[in-house]
Amino acid sequence: MKVNMYLNFDGNAEEAFNFYKSVFGGEFSFKLRFSETPEGDKIPKEEQNRIMHISLPLSGDSVLMASDIMPSANQTLKHGNMNYISLHPQSREEADRLFTSLSEGGSVEMPMEDQFWGDYFGCFVDKFGIQWMINYNPEF
Image 1 (cartoon, one colour):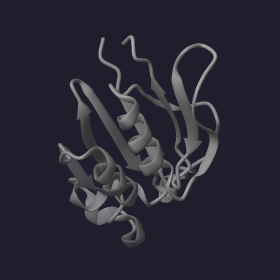
Image 2: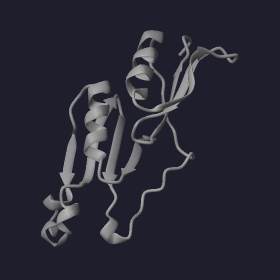
Image 3: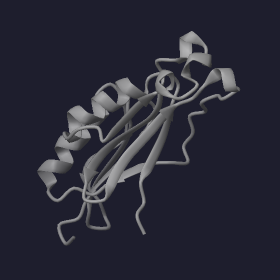
Image 4: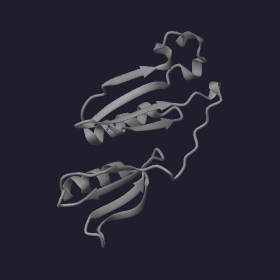
C-alpha cells in the first residue's frame, strides 16, 4: 500500500509548495492551475490562477500533494488539529534541518528533544497552518 499526503489551501498552495520544495528539494511532478483545465475559462477570474493539483515527490514512493479550494464552489478551508505530516529522517542532523526549515514563521508545539520513548522528536505548525512531526529513531 502506498500512502501520500494531500493538503488543501485557500489560494496559497503554490506559495506553500515552493517553500516545501526549498526544504525538500526535487521538482514538481505535476502542477495544474484551474485556468488550464478544459473549462478553465468558465471559472471566476479571481480563482483561475489557483492550483487545481500539485505534486512534489519527497523520497521513494512518498509524494506530497495539494490543491487550492474554490470559494465559488462553496468550498471553505477549515484548519484543524486532526492531521499531521510525520517525517522520519535518517539522521539527527536531517531531523534538525527539517524542523528548523519547516517551522520557520510557524509555531513550535514541542521543540526537537530526546524523548522518554527513545526517539528524537519535535512537532510544530508551519506558517501555512500545516501540522508536522519530525521523529528520528537511530534504530530505524
